[in-house]
Amino acid sequence: MARPGVWALVLAGGDGVRLQGLTRALTGAPIPKQYCRIVGDRSMLEATLARTAPLVPPARTLAVVNRDHLPLAREQLRVLPARNVLVQPSNRDTGPGILFGLFRLARRSPAATVVVLPTDHFVRDEGRFLAHLARAIDVVRRLPKRIVLLGIVAQRAETGLGWVQPGRALSDDATMPALRVRAFVEKPDAATAEAMMRAGGLWNSFVMCFRLDAMFALLARHRPHDVAALRRGGVRSHSALPPWNFSRDFLARVPRRLLVVPVGDVGWSDWGTPEAIERSLVALNVVPPWRRRRTRNEVAA
Image (cartoon, rainbow, N blue to C red):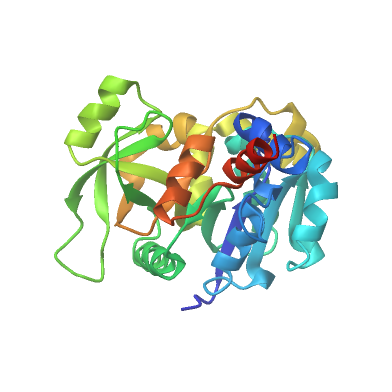
């Protein structure tokens, strides 16, 4: 399944504020969720790296982390070469974080095909998920000016996720499993989410694939000041960039350049809230660890 020449950019720079109460309960400290072993013996970061390895080897996997997270991150990133751990000065949201990683990658492989992977996802069927991602990579190789997203078949009218409204298929060719994108809406209100659900909308997983040179050309058009600042000042300019969200402030503005590969029942969830985690674990017949702890405390009382 490995794809030669493909690089992975793993995003591990978030602060995970919404889950800090939960991570404090589990570990005794409000650590960012991607470094927390919520269930089992792997953190969300470690699970993402392991999930990616069959498709993109560690030698071509880069991880973006925050400087103040390094004490937590170092141990969990030992599977990567040291030069593949990219330390951004601070968290400036997903826009500057992705730009930071892409600029570092461009020094090594300016025409790379890139897969971007967040580290706050749960995936039950990792083999099937990787098969969808491999198809997205193949689409980008045939259509190098497009950004291909993995769109999750929606289970409910979720307002905490981005939505992709798919359009027509690219062709009748079964080897091109991508759909055009009619609209992209980041975290809509309840009425809009309901309407998109009824219209067959997909959740944006934020897993995406693209050619690096094509992405830079598009970013230079829509975020020219950020691109120019990093070109002039490199890492030193990162902290001066305004925070911006890659989905809301970029992807939503270029729907005609997007394609989406629908992803069915792989048991995907964005573990952004305790409720999302509980839904995933209940589906696996696993009692959430904080529920088990509460039960033991109640018994002891």
